[in-house]
Image (cartoon, rainbow, N blue to C red; front, side):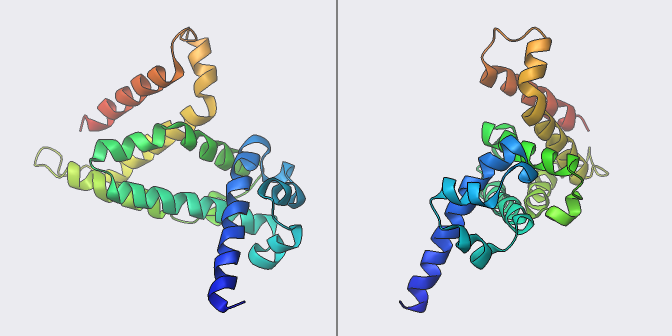
Length: 191
């Protein structure tokens, strides 16, 4: 095997492990999932996790880092700021929110999991460019991103529950999510 072949095989295995770990970590939390379970779901030899990634904490960090990298790319390349912000409220974001919530509730420090998020920095830059107007000279885009992210994470964890208890259970979930997002966006836009 050449180095390029080995490197490509390694990256394929790591990608499969990360992809398999995301829903498992979202459903059970990292503490409730064994590395053997992740390896089986990924169809990857268990020993390769330790060889390519390391510990379960390392895998959790990698899952969060890869998600952040995907989001960074999307936030930078999104056609509009609104498209970038809408990305936070999509169903896949709920999976990420559950991983973060379960990790924090298990006692992990958010800054130890990911550090400062490159994705949120990219979104802050997009929003700052969008709100750079004379009417909002003191508006800090990071505050807007914090509010939007908090709403996205909260809705990702509790959205279905809140929809039911608010009497909206008879309405399509995606329509309610969009309406909630629109309300949050209007609140953030009022500067």
